Image (cartoon, rainbow, N blue to C red; front, side, top):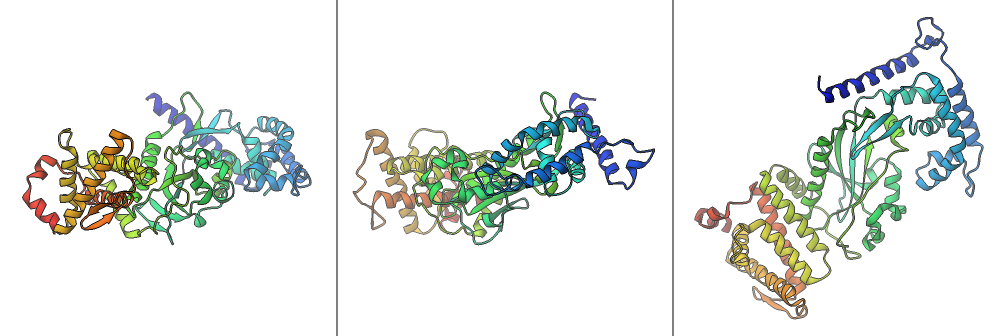
Length: 468
């Protein structure tokens, strides 16, 4: 038996042992039977939890007009933290009673999460039992906690609240990915904080965009954590490959939304939510959230059109089916397009767009790069002669802006350029080039792979097909 298999066996044995205790608690009259595994099962812990429930309901939280019990079961993290300070002396007694109870495991246990695991027993057992007993009885709280510790796996949702995406109703992108209005998410302190507690969002809260526009849409991914309960060893046995793939899938789906509009979707806050209410209660004291450090802060008040559901479904599914090397290049192009849309300076925006275009159309040869980008992108996008001429001119003018920014540090942002007979400012040129770049990424995703450019350049049939 391998070391990994031994760990799995050990975890399974702990779950089986705890499950037997759960079954015992659910069997009538077992406590008085000679065959009971706990013939002298103590009532001390249950009685203490019941007494503490009455005390906490009758104790006012200092500085507030609610009881300590109400603060512990509300969805305000600040009130919960204040209530825990009041509760802390009583937790020492509960902790000692848990050790003497006889029904709990002797091992140190952890509960898995998306990003690793954290202690569930004996760490946090006292707080979890007290909070649960506020809504039930002491004995029911004990039975609940033993049931959770005996759970081998659990399903849930990985939630990404997004800026820059507005939808009127749920959009099922794939079998396990969906866009959901924030108003339809399960109630949680994380969801509440999106509207009322922006300072809890982490680094993202420094953005003016965060203060002005609470996210209204979330990308939700279905997932199963297996194993759920772990015997805490060094290092703990975690199924991180599955969660790493999940996180990449969610990140990629977010990037794919960039093509629609185009827009610059950004993670505001992410968290994990269990489907099972009992496990959710056990995770409540441990659950957290995270955001991302925003290197390029969006403009305050930046808005995007309502998301087109059909194209979103097509892009996310198509991206997942792309050939791996092409997928990696498309991912980078999407990242750079998103950064271009968030850039404030026009020169920086042109540089980002040039990188995105070159990622898709360059072949590794440093000669005549801008010419190759212009010709290949125009061929892929197709259209009639007027459309091809306009696209080529947009790319050429974008590269002119990029060159002036890179080589002189500035350019004349007020001077209009003529593109296909129309007078456009540099800002208008770059806005249209961003849309062109999004269309090019859409075309690559629909193809399923980025062409081998040496062959594509001489493929007359491909050129003819794209023109029509």
